[in-house]
Image (cartoon, rainbow, N blue to C red; front, top):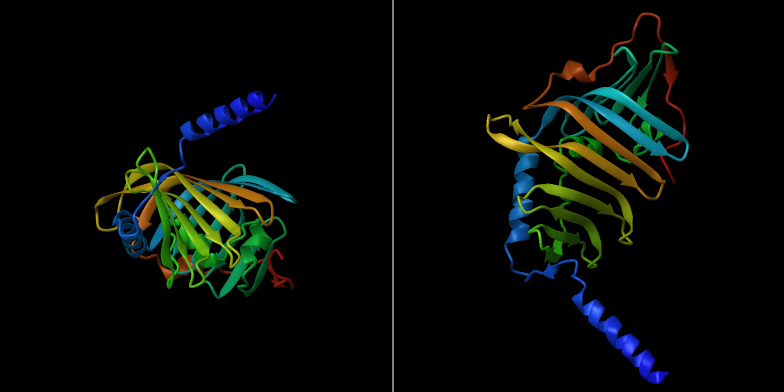
Length: 271
């Protein structure tokens, strides 16, 4: 009996030794993570605005949604979202400059307006992000948080590089995954306890003319996961036009003649 148990343990050890590791740890002075962050920083600096048509699908505990949209975004926090109906008529519009917002509901001919809170996008669309984070992700170039240091980095068999960035306590606050071509594939935001707050996956890369005329890869599919609120979303772009800037009037929502004003509701985002 003891011999059989010993053989079983030995076989398990052999199998575990043959199981591929998730990645080979890179030396602390390996330049690849720093080069990837530099490339992301260049994307942040050059991608300042876009106009696009897209489809948003959402699955939250209290809401399911799958509708086409027109989008305009500009750093740092300007956002216009037009939700379209069956025949491409406007069903609702959200406009914010990062400080105040207006939401127009075509069914009820009402406009809600108020100051932006951290939970605005969660309340109106079940997207657990602030306007700044939403703009960063729609541009495909999230801004790395300042003041963090590089944590453990690994290289995978396919040439992709994964690493985290840590605070002064050594806790992971951000995680990045790039593929072998240097394209961002995953970005994770973690809280002070290193628990995942949200994750963004970038896929279906296509080449677009950048604002300086040079070609650059752009992710036409962004999948979002919000574990603390049990929600998921996917943004699938149909067309994208990158821009240096957008006119201020795009982010202004005028009152239709018959629309009534509503005060901003009390309360914030998910607890």
